[in-house]
Structures are given as C-alpha cells and as structure tokens.
Image 1 (cartoon, rainbow, N blue to C red):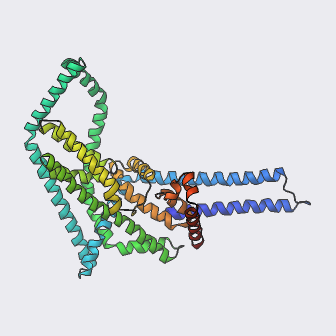
Image 2 (image 1 turned 45 degrees about the vertical axis):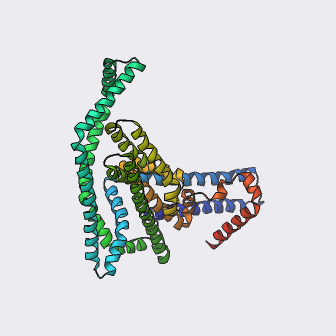
Image 3 (image 1 turned 180 degrees about the horizontal axis):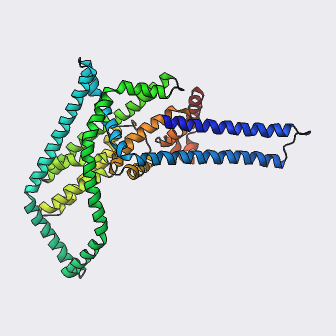
Amino acid sequence: MPIINYLRDIHTKLTMDLRKSFKQLISKLLNKEEFEIDDNSEALIAEEKSGSLGKSITYSLLAVGLVIAFLYALQSILIPILFSLILSVTLFPVCNFLEKWGFNRLMASLTTLVLAIILFLGISYLFVSQTINIGRDASEIVGKIETVLKEGEKYANDKLNLSRTDIISKAKEELNKAAPDIGGFVTRFFGSIGSFLSMGILVPLIIFFFLYYRDFFKEFFVRACYSAPREKVEATLTKMYEALNNYLGGMLMVMGLIAVLNTIGLMILGIEYAWFFGILASLLMLLPYIGIAIGSIIPALFALATKDSYWYAVGVVAWFQFIQTLEGNIITPNIVGNKVSLNPLVSILSLFLFSMLFGFAGLILALPLMAIIKVLFDAVSELKPYGFLLSEPEKKYLWTERQKRLKPAKVAKENLEEKIDRIEE
C-alpha cells in the first residue's frame, strides 16, 4: 500500500507539473499583441508534452527498479514472511471455526498452529518412512541400474562404435567441465538446508502472529490508506483474501484428486510404492507447468530400474501426461475456474521473475502473489489498466476480423456494456 501511495503521488506531481507548464505557455502567448498558434508554438507544446512523458516513464522505471532491488535485498526475510502469509490464509477458516466454538483468539490461534504442525509432521513421517523402505531395496535397484547401463554400453558399442574406454574418457571430460558447477550446487544445497531449518522455526512463529493479530494488521492497512474511504480499503482486503483463499483451496482439491488418479495409474502398471510416487507428483504441482513433468520422471526412472521392460517407464510417462492434460483442460478449470484469472503469458513471466528474485521458493510464491497484485491493481483506479493487462483476455479480444463482422450485434452490445461500466466507475 505505501508503494501504491508513492506511485500515486508521482502521478499527481507529474500531472500538476504538466498543467503548470501549459499555464505558463498560454500566459506567455496571451501577453503578445496577437495570439497565434504558429509552428514554433506547436513545436513548443509538443516539446512540453514529450518532456513530461519522458519524466513519467523515467519515474515509473525508477520506481519499478527500486521495488525489485528492495525485494532482492530483503529476500531472506521476505520468503518466510510470504510463506507464512499464504499458509495463514489457508488456516484462517480453521481458526474462525474454533472461535465460533467458544475458543478465544489466543487459544484458537495456538490450536490451529499445533494442528497444522501435527499434520505436516505426519505427512513428513510417511514420506521419510517410505524413502527408507525404498533405500532398503537399494541393492536390487542398483543391480537393475547396472544392467540398464550395460545394455546402454552395448548399444553404444554396436551402433556408435564407442568402447568403454571412450565412454569413460568422455564422462571424465564432461565431469571436469561440470566440477565448478557441481561444487557451487553443493554449497548452495547445504546453505538451503540451513535456511530451511531456520524457516522451520521462523514460519510457525510468524503464522501464529498473523492469526492472532489479523484484525490489528487489517486496521493498520486501513489507516495506512487514509486517503481512501475505509469501506473501499476493507473491500479490497476482503477481495485479496478471497482470491488467495479460493485459489489455495481449489489447488488443494486439485492436488488431492491428482494424487488419487496418479496412484491408481501406478497401481494398474504394477509400480511399487504407487501411493508414495502419486502423492509426491501431486505435491510437485506447487511448481506450475513443470511440477507434473518432474513428478512423472521420478517414477518412470524407478520403473526403468525395477522392471524387466522399459515399456513400464513409457506407460508411467504416458499416464502422467494424460493426467496432466486432464488436469489442465477439465479438472482445474472446473474446480479453480477463474478464481485467479491471470493470462498464461503473465503467469510464465511471473514464474521467471519470482524465481530470479527468490530462487526455488519464487516458483511456489509466484501465482498466489500475482493474484494479490491483480486484485490490488483492480481496486486502484490509476492502476486498473495494469490489472486489465494481467487478467485473462475476454473472447472478443481473440476474435478475427471475420468473426467480428459475423457478430456485429454482440460486439456492439459488449462495447456498450463496457462504456456503461466505465461511466459507473
């Protein structure tokens, strides 16, 4: 909100400067004996407009750059805060339910947090136990992998005329090239473990205060936006909460359904630990667009290592691709719908931007945060064009010229409705 107020102040200042420049220009012209708009006057007016436009673009780019620099510099503290915010929104209904049953705010917040921690630890225990069970079969899996590697070596020797010595030398050469990257990856990996452990302590604490102080924080935002009517600020906060809550609730339902479908497919194919891989693939849906693809590779490699035929791995990939198509075209549109109506281009660009700012965590945070930003843009009149840019385009903007000619009445009706909406605003 302070950032929005800052941008609004810049916009107001630029508008006042532009009006002042025009007033000075007109006063100079009126002081002349004859008032004529000659070529020099028109050039001067154009220069004034161009200068103001240049200032506006410069200030806007500067503001965007400052925001990005601010986010990048404070990512170590912003990541746990943003995760805590999203998880708190998910837990708000539970906390409200307990308060309706007679719990006070403190006990309801503590109970909700404890239940969430128990659920998280339970799921983690199941996954760790299954990982240990898979590790017990490691000797058999390693033997299968060795067999696959020998078959690959035989194929390379027969078809590509590569001996084992050539393969080993090539592998060593590539490994030496990748050694610096591997070292950097290991360093980042252990650093991320430390960050994860610190988040494990910090996130629950922040979640508790978000639950306990939620009305207090709401009042802060109302007072911070003192220039706007209280009702409008509260309505905007409610829309932001509903957009995020509906998106998260819908995604949880989708993930649960995908987990069941994944598990059924793996069981039909006879893949061991089917439910483990099925749930893992559904959890990877937190990574938009790439999560299901990664989730299909893991059981496919496991099938390749444990089954006698590579067709099992092909079957796993084919089933997961079918589920991904089903999810993208039927399941998610019907469950989540337009609760977060971001167009695909904005979604992809936001994934790149947030991953650059926050790393792996940015892939998870991107779409929920963009949903909040879109609601915020829609609520501020000066930023509504940007909210329109983020939204899913209506069908009329995707029509060809031929379709527009065939549907003139519908186009005229939609244009009239759009004008009425603008007048009402």
